[in-house]
Length: 506
Image (cartoon, rainbow, N blue to C red):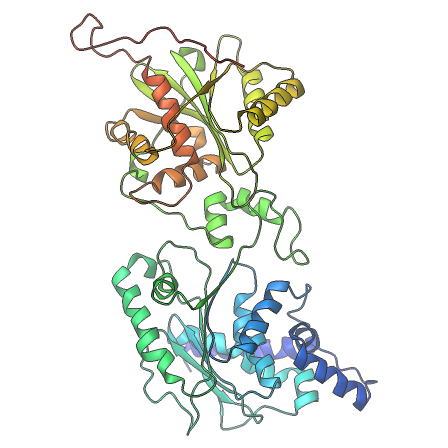
């Protein structure tokens, strides 16, 4: 036996042992109580999980599991994408819990589990095969399901008629049937890999395979197709299919609120769990994996143009600006309050610090007050905010923040056109290409700056992503540009900007 086969057998035996010891049968349950419990499990997905899978139900069954199970049960030909963030149990749900629940509701279940390769498909199928073989509650309620002669690695048929088969993505599906039975539910589980997202032509090929080969293997009343994958990249097989089939269901669940860090699955995760995840792996990586918010890099601003260097002493800068792009609401879908603190040294521009958060205005004002109070006495910072139609609310937030922190911000209101933002931000490109923008090297691991740079990289024609940091960044550079001296300043093609005028100062 090959080493991989031995490891697979050992893993499966351990799985059987775990399942067999995880569920205790109630010896005092009467036949009437047993029937009532089975009937309840058929009607309620939550009750089904609690009765048969206590080893999975270590936390309360979440609402989004119940919601999708209901949708799938009602729609026998559903085509859907489970875009659930990492750690939301999408594999357990799609590969084990949902197919089993459909089976106890007397549906003919022929499950095909598709992995990114054949071995992975077999490994995924082991979970539900082991449940049928060793789960005491299933055996107690539905009899022994182990079926010698039809119990192989990658394929099994229970005595109750449940068929399970494993498949590798892209594998030939011709002859995918058992006698006259065809698949009734197909689940593609985490088929997209980091390598695959770098290969657009293969992604197109796999999307075609799903449409033209995989789904047509189903024939009859039951034709469910579910792809379970968090959206960790901008372009994936699922996004291609979603564009082609806008009527297919996209069931998206983010793991946490990026503003409050409140978990979606409250009974499983603590209030600070995902805050700590962001601190461990960075905001961009966390939001990509857990919140279906992939980092997108365009072609105008790219990673290699970002220069990091040790920050010069602040009192050596000619002038320093903190430019605030104001956002009113603080929610998971709102704009970001973005503050870019930047300085001019010689003819170069330095990004010194930054604040980029989906938060209330008062948090942004608190940041400015605390930053200003921490500066050496020899350093002055000029604050600018972009005028809004709700300037009274902005002033109120500024007044409250100044009072709370016992400081007075040197802050100026700027009127900027609301149109032409793409053209305005694109004006930064020559500065990057000419190597005139430097970032404080201490910002390399700043969550705020990771988010800000991700927004900058996403700027391209027709972009629909957030642009709050790029807008603040460009606004601050435009302020600094007024103080750059080009040439000799004596009429030979150069100029020197005049003195900074503090108008409309609050």
